[in-house]
Length: 209
Image (cartoon, rainbow, N blue to C red; front, side, top):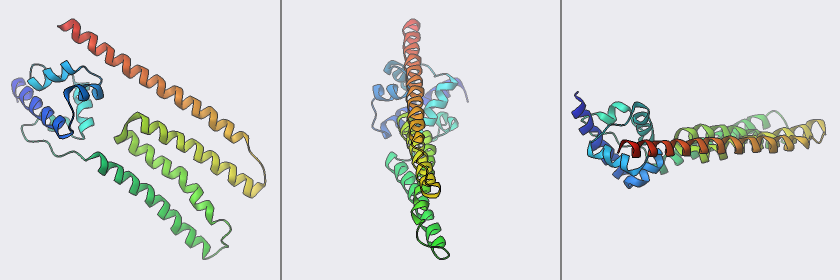
């Protein structure tokens, strides 16, 4: 495949994928941390992005780089609503397994500790949401999911020790608060780096012009 063919296929596919998401060039540029001029050049077939940006675009649309430059029409990407449904069903499945475990336990033991199955299921649900968020839903959703994991773990530890050892480990929530601050700082640093990268890309484009 020649460079001219790659440019043509890429420009056609990028335009089709952007329109399938009902995005303007400016909106897509914002999501990719580039200027709308870059997206316009790509869709006109004037230039090709670097390999890192190729991978970023392919990842955003849920396709491979090969599909992005192929002469064939790219496969349809999963709808955002469908992704949320998959994530929700996965979380519900964890709670369902907790219910099965509780019912199995209750057939041999008393009902006193059945609530612990649901308590311990909450951190697992948070881990599931971290996985889906990091793949599909972006930094903000990932930040919320990680925060949920920290606090559900904290609550699980606190209530377990209180129930079985009758000790009030109140400082667990202090530790959760410290971890929460660290999470906020980390994602603030990541967001700052993203914005700086976006600014650098725009400056480079201006220099090239």
